[in-house]
Amino acid sequence: MNSTAPFSRHNSIIRRTLAPAMSPGPGGKSACIFCEIAARRVPAHVVYEDDATIAFLDLFPYTRGHLLVVPKHHGARLSDLPPADQHALIRTLAELSRRTERLTPDYNIGLNTGAKAGQVVFHVHFHIIPRYSEESPFDVIDRVRLTDPEARSLLDVLSAA
Ligand code: 5GP
Ligand code: ZN
Image (tube, rainbow, N blue to C red):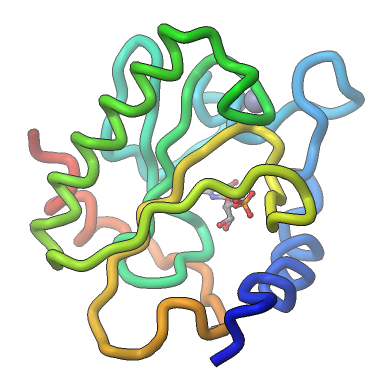
């Protein structure tokens, strides 16, 4: 098990692949990728949306059904959000947790805050990572880009209220 640095190799791969996503957000040089997705200017496989939050499939999933739960309000970390947006985010996290249980009762919820904690996209987001096997959830794995057929089959399961 490699539990001391679970995301380090993953992060170097993802950083190279997703360089445009590592943006500072509004006011910075380039647009924030999650703001762009929330505004529907960049496509994503969206499974849930309300006034304050959006949830979509991770482009490089750890496991089948890996979701990102994101506030529409830009902030790098949870503590940057106004309380109403924090509460909305947790409500949506609970809703998507319930839907994830259609896939498997076992899952991790994660929130990386800061580069040293593995944050790559500096717009706060929860990960919901379904678990299907007994392997350690913290083993480093190679992540493969989500395919459209896989995304469609997941949308069928996760988009329904
Ligand atoms: P972090 O390491 O910041 O907690 O996680 C960022 C996550 O965002 C990664 O799991 C990465 O695969 C995902 N991601 C980055 N850019 C995009 C994108 O443009 N679309 C989607 N759907 N996921 C993204
Ligand atoms: Zn943003």
